[in-house]
Image 1 (cartoon, helix red, strand yellow):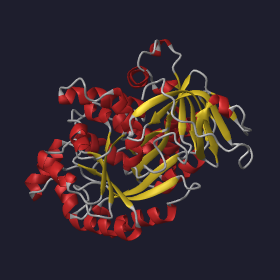
Image 2 (image 1 turned 180 degrees about the vertical axis):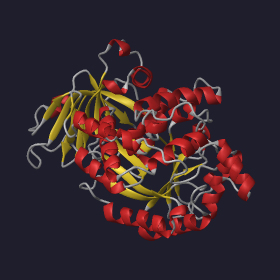
Image 3 (image 1 turned 135 degrees about the horizontal axis):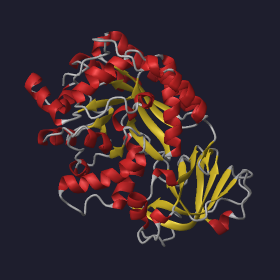
Image 4 (image 1 turned 90 degrees about the vertical axis):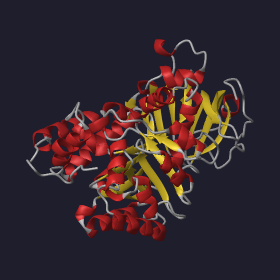
Amino acid sequence: MTATDQPAAEPPAPGARGPADLVVTHCTALVHDPEGHVGFAADRAIVVRDGIVAALTSSAEAARLDAAERIDARGQVALPGLVNCHTHSPMVALRGIAEDLPVEEWFNDWIWPIESNLTDRDVALGARLACAEMIRGGVTCFADHYFAMESVADAVTDSGLRAHLGAAYFSSQGPEGRARSLEFALDHRGAADGRITTCLAPHAPYTVDDADLAATAQLAQEHGLSVHIHAAENRDQTESSLARTGRTPIETLQRAGLLDEGVELLIAHATGLVERDLGVLGAARGRVAVASAPRGYLKFAWDTTPVRALARLGIPVGLATDGAASNNTLDVWEAMTLTALVQKQSTGDPAWLTARQALHHATVQSAHAVGLGDTLGSLAPGRRADLILVDLSGPHTRPVHDLAATLVHSARSADVTTTIVDGKVLMRDRELLTLDVPRIAAQLEERLPELTRRAPGRRIQDYRP
């Protein structure tokens, strides 16, 4: 499909159920053909009713419809909202606090001692600032893995975003950690008018023991919950696991039952995968996805997620930022650009990964990674009305020879003008409508002296991969 292809319009029935809630007209829409390939359709209109895309039709057809709200998106591109498939949103409070360090020093001497001081108030303010940043960057859904998740859930509710939330736990917390993760998942799934989905969130195989991992797999099957975990984050972790247990982190997940039928597993990072892991993942009976956050891997001098090898196994790889303490940003647009570039470098193949493939990871694959592939990821009738508008009128995006290349390699997150979730406008013409950033930032800055205090020898966990 090319930029001039026009998919068959699906005009809504005239006057059906009264006025539409929202009609976005005169946009170029990113669309997917039946095989999922990315293309573009000019002069489209997106009709929204009850938080759902009711129709993707022509602007001329939509002009005849009554609508409670209209947005003229002339000169803009409409995309499915971006999904941040793995982050720790409250960690924006620690942005830039520990730089240019190896990961073990970063964790043990800085991040985990500071996190020991965090209050629910700190988490709440950090999560709200993160939500504002993601809305401005075109993110409509994020998968979060952190502590004090009730505060994060409140931020999601107030911001209007969609989120997949898991309360993280370590085995060092005892049985109570796992119990709290389950309690949060059961109490909050379906919250925020259905915008919140939940999961179990064991931290990683090196901080959660085999018994806890096996219990997590059992709980996931019993309660229909997915699992979000860090695993094979880097090659050192894999080598350490092999030396200590004779198993890779991925083989540890398999042994615990987390790759069994009935378990949906989201693995963060997986830059430390070795050849034997690919066979294990390929044989998984449950649904497995990987979240890749390339900016952080560059900062820590890690390898990158082997996207091509995972693609051959049919494993979706969603885009992510990780936390802003390591990544400095929650910019998924940048993650899309870096994914395309780093994959070329790591494979030695300039033809991989293409701009259209990068957009596929940013849309369809990211939605599948967080377990929402049936409701998000494309602008199609029946999908949730989570979408963004991107202005390509700036000098850095002109002229446009290849729209996919322009979006991936020239456009920036700051070119997102409008962010919509469930048909509700959260940002219009770069103005945030649900969060007061100056107020949130001022309150957070008042907390900095206490927030950044490090008690010697006090940390929530040791990093010993």
